[in-house]
Image (tube, rainbow, N blue to C red; front, top):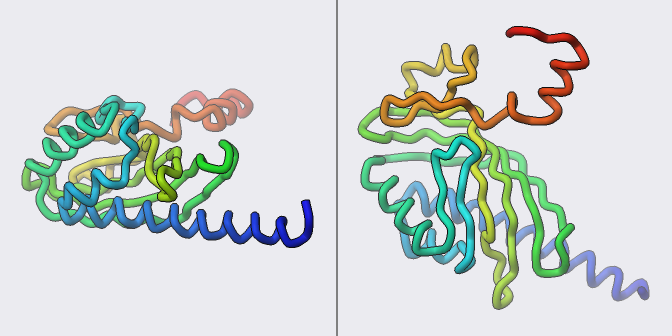
Length: 188
């Protein structure tokens, strides 16, 4: 590879990284605005949206559309914001993977709720545009605001319509489990 082609490849990667960052921000804004046309324009036709807890699961644009419609019908104002964003171009020139750390304030069923999550993403460039091919939402917690102060002291940190589910992380991660084994942690 010549010096000029190496420079061009590096610039293209930086541009792709910026486009993917805008994709992530557009998702947050579209969710907060209940902007279904914009939101659906961010996914590939065969996209997958899910969460390890089973709270969310949809394959393909029609199912993702239905999932968000059902969600937005019971959710009032919300605010999503993203923090750190890691992008890896480890899947070829038109596909990348990413991890996004985020928080949200939502109001499902008129109950103010707080969430902390990690999005494990796969991005695909289609027609010159980066889209979500997969978005997995991993919740540290998603709880009514009134329960937030006690939320981190139990593994059941996802509350939806009165149901409690185990959090998606960190207890399920290999690193967490290895630490507990290596350091003989029995109970927290």
